[in-house]
Length: 92
Image 1: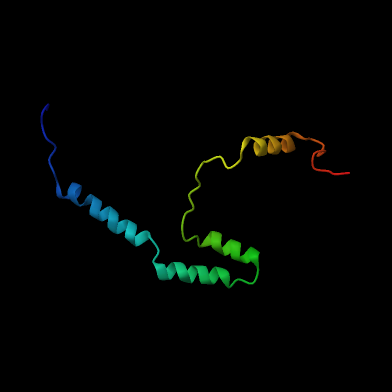
Image 2: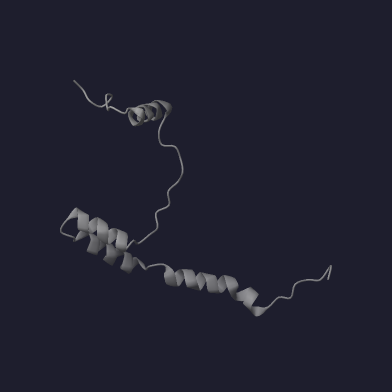
C-alpha cells in the first residue's frame, strides 16, 4: 500500500472541464442580464421593482465584512441603540 501512486482515470482528468461547462451553463448570458434589468426598470412602482429584483436576482452580491464606521460613528450608533427613552434623538 505504501508508495503506490493513485491511478489516473478519465473521470478525474475531465472533472475540471465538466465543472467549467457546468458553471458556464449556470451563468446567465449578457443578453439575459440586460433583459432582466429592463424588466426590473419597467416596473410601475419601486416596491414591484424590488420584489422582481429579489425574485430574478442576476448576480449574487457578496458582502465584504469590513468595518465601515470609525470609532466616533460607532460610539454614536451604540449610544443611540442603548438609549431606551430616545432622548438622544428627540430635540427640544
